[in-house]
Amino acid sequence: KAIRRQRQMCIRDRSSCLDEVPYGTYSNQTFYNTEADAESALMYAYVPLNYIDYCGRFLFYLGDVPTNQYKSYGKADESPLFQWDITPTSDEAIYFFKSAYVSLARTNSVLDNVARMSDISAAARNKILGEAHFLRAFNHFMLVINYGSVPIRSKTVSSTSDSYKDFSPISDVYAFIIGELEDAIGLLPVNKVQGRADKVAAQALLARVYLYLASAKASGAPGYDLSLIHISEPTRPLY
Image (tube, rainbow, N blue to C red; front, side, top):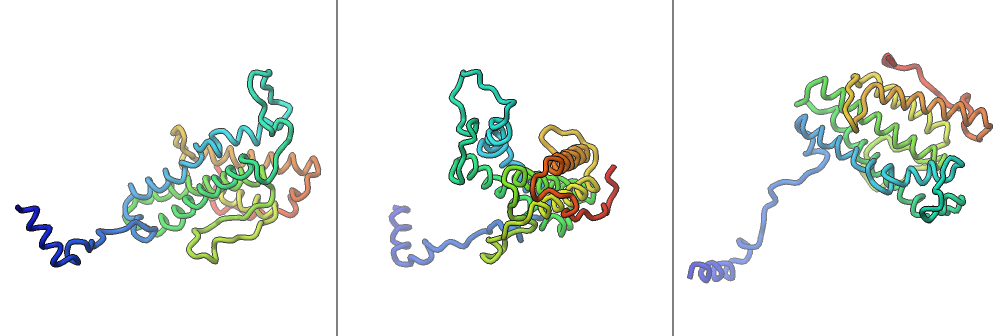
């Protein structure tokens, strides 16, 4: 009887039964409130690095399989990349590129929002921002060594006009990466935690970046001339 009466009331006044007032929504403007929120957003930015389409497997396909160091010993089907058979529509080319920018979108959200938070300690803020600068450098490094000229993503996409970016010259991408790593080194402590970046990780990646630049310059690869890369003086100590 109670259910029947409730149904009759809903029929008489449908608006009161069917209208729902939203309790709240998450956005960049409402999510970043506590240190735990900032940490959660940072972890979300790390997640794509584990994608099979990215560093989980496709990094091996793009970085190792095409080289003369790779051997399958005939025990498995060769990836087409082993024969240098790749097109703009190859899965490895498409999804590696896409996954890097997924991580960058999340990383930019962290950098744009954590800096303005008030309910967070200075040590936690610096560490989270330092790791985010590392991730932004890492993703751009993955892109430039595999694709060359790529769009630089340095802020959150907030409108449709921001969704398209021109491809930046290789020299500009490397200069951006170096600047990000210098910022990361200045913000991060030495704190060895598996799967997380710290000062040593940022220093190691910066060294790797310079090795790639030196190797490309020595071999005469176009776009890698160090004279074209505008490297600013570090604003923080690199050690």
